[in-house]
Structures are given as structure tokens and as C-alpha cells.
Image 1: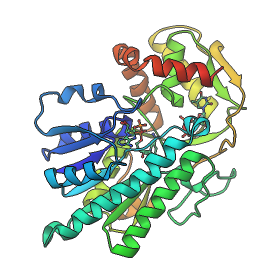
Image 2 (image 1 turned 135 degrees about the vertical axis):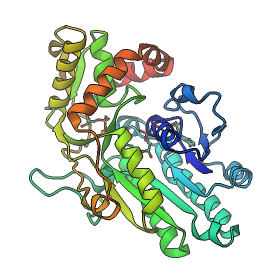
Image 3 (image 1 turned 90 degrees about the vertical axis):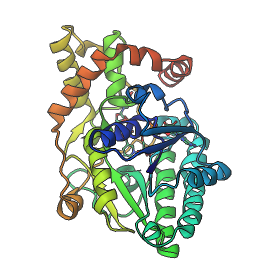
Image 4 (image 1 turned 60 degrees about the vertical axis):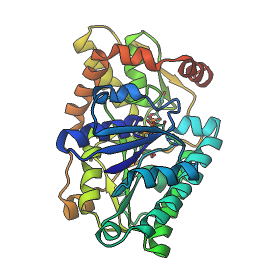
Amino acid sequence: MILVTGGAGFIGANFILEWFSRNNEPVVNFDKLTYAGNLQNLASLQSDVRHVFVQGDICDSQKLKQLLDDYQPRAIIHFAAESHVDRSIHGPDDFIQTNIVGTFRLLEAARHYWNKRIGKEHYDFRFLHVSTDEVYGSLPPDVPAFTEEHVYSPNSPYSASKASSDHLVRAYHHTYGFPTLTTNCSNNYGPFQFPEKLIPLMIVNALTGKPLPIYGDGQQIRDWLYVKDHCIAISRVLEAGVPGKTYNVGGWNEKPNIEIVSLICDLLNEFCPGDYHQLITYVTDRPGHDRRYAIDARKIERELAWKPLETFETGIRKTVQWYLEHKDWIANVQSGEYRKWIAMHYQ
Ligand code: NAD
Ligand code: TYD
């Protein structure tokens, strides 16, 4: 079996669902269930014996050791993290703890476990670390997209904590020969994304007639990838990636935020007619806001024959439809904690 950390979150849950759509290999899903972890994302697996859920914190070395001894995974896919830039600005502590200390504890537990395995089980073991393009920092306009060789220059507590975890993963390969793989992906969107991130927040707010808050001038550029394409890329890297290597994953979809929000308004108008554009509201910019991210995904295309299946236009249409068809899911994640965040952040 494989071990997935953070499998109750947005990308982890999509990964597990995608994995079982092509594969019967069991998954043990280790997740702390923070505000961002939601087992409802995996409700369709409720009586599926291929999925085992264990609640726990990646900072807990004892629990990690027990988990590895109990389930003997052949690989670890490490998604668990604090993932929201705005939250990292308001309160960086959890980011340092989970993303840096947690990744370190997981690496240590995994390294000891790997050392005890012999023969093929030792040689075939893999540790795949899921990271972000934000570690490379902000790209000026008209400069080529981030390659795997781009210098690290993280600007937010979130991206600094992810960069730190990437360095630890790299060092574990360099020092111990530990068989790591790292993926640095651009912004994901799709089903089950918590409505604190740009795309689901805009859909959810528009549906309830709330303002659509655009930070600064709305001209910041992100490179968007449909989540299922990211999940397929991770499976491909696990299967054929070379230990110690890094693979950038992206959809060649650079778009300014205002264009994304405008497109969401048009799509919503198509499905549930209404003037959503009038809800667009420019608000104070995020401190230290990165202007542009862009991923050069040629290495994974060339070496592992991966390419995204969705264009932005097909992916965003599916996403808007998914949120329209899952109003119960939206209502359930809008707990007291979520309301507190929205009230505090958008005050
Ligand atoms: P998410 O916030 O939706 O989910 C994170 C999951 O990790 C949650 O289920 C949470 O309960 C769990 N978790 C948090 N702290 C934990 C801990 N200490 N121990 C165990 N579990 C813990 O995040 P996401 O958007 O699904 O991102 C997953 C990974 O992908 C992250 O590492 C993130 O940095 C990376 N990534 C995200 C994006 C994106 O656009 N969302 C893009 C590139 C890379
Ligand atoms: P986000 O989804 O938080 O992802 P990231 O910061 O990791 O790229 O934000 C995407 C872009 O949208 C980013 O430039 C910030 C902007 N944004 C807004 O303009 N308004 C919002 O309410 C949010 C949440 C984000």
C-alpha cells in the first residue's frame, strides 16, 4: 500500500479518488483534520476497504513510527501542510510547525523505516514531497517561466516554510541517499477546494450575493492547473521519476486574477442568470503580494510524458458546475471557524 499524508484536504482527497479510479492498491490516509481537512471529501469511499483513515499529526514521531510499522507502505506521498498564504500572514506559527518541523519528523520516521527494509522493498521505496511554485518567488513580467533550476526566493511565511521543507527533502537525498521525489506545482483549482482560496471563495460569495474581494489592482498573475491533472502528474512522478529529482508541474495557463473572477461571473450567469460582475470589489492588497508565478513544465512533459488533459476553459467550467451541484458540501465547510476567518480577514 501507499501512505498519503493530508489526504482529507483538497489535493490529497482528489489524489486518493483519482488513484482508486485507476488502481486497487490500498491507501492509508494520515491526516490531522485541521480546519482544511474534511472526511466528507472522501464520503464515496466510506465502505471501501482500499481506504484506511488514521487521524494524527505529522509532528508526532511516535505515531508516525507506529503507522509505518503497522502499514508497511511502499511509498509516501506527502501532501499534509498548512497551505493558505493569507493565514500564514496572520499567524505563521502553524506553518513553521507543520510544514517545516512536521516534514522533518516525517522524513526522520520514513528514513528509519526505509533503513530497516531490505532488498527490493528498500530499493523501490519512494518519498514524494508535494510542493509549490511559490518557493521560487515573484516573477517580473516577460521573464521566462520557472524551471527546476530557478533560484529559491520565497516571499511569504507559507512559501518560506515550503521552501524550507523542500531543502530538507533535498538534503535527505543528498546526505542519506533517501529516495525522494519533489514536485513543485502551480495554483490548483477544482472540486473540494476550501472556499478561502480565490476560485471557490468567488463562487461561494457570488452565489450568496456577497462582495468578490479583489486584492490591489487584480493584475497579479497565477498559473492555473486543474487538480486532477496535478494528481495524475504525481502518480506519474511516483511511477517513473528519478530519485533526488524535482519536477515542475503546471498547466501553461497564466491569467490575471481579475480575468479569472470575471470568467467565474460569466459562467455563473450562464448557469444561474444574474449580474455577478457588480459584486466585484477592490480591497486592500495582501502584504508582500507576489505579482506573478509561471511554471515551465517541459521537464515533466519530456522525461515523463505527462501533459494536462484540461484547458483552463474546460476545467473552470467543471469546477463552477461542481460547486453548483454541491451546495451541501459548501454549507458544511462554512463552520464557525470558517466564518471567524472571513469576518477577521475581510474586515
Ligand atoms: P489543504 O490545506 O486543502 O489540505 C491540507 C491537509 O493537510 C488537510 O487535510 C489538513 O487536515 C492536513 N494537515 C495539516 N496539518 C497537518 C498535520 N500537522 N498533520 C497531518 N495532517 C495535517 O491543502 P492542499 O491545497 O490540498 O495542498 C496540499 C499540498 O499541496 C500542500 O503541501 C501544498 O503546499 C501543496 N500545493 C498546493 C497547491 C494549491 O494550489 N492548493 C499548489 C501546489 C502545491
Ligand atoms: P490564493 O487562492 O490564496 O492562492 P495563492 O496566494 O497561493 O496564489 O490566491 C490566488 C490569487 O488571488 C492571489 O494573487 C491572491 C488573490 N486573491 C484575491 O484577490 N482575493 C481573495 O479574496 C483571495 C483569497 C485571493
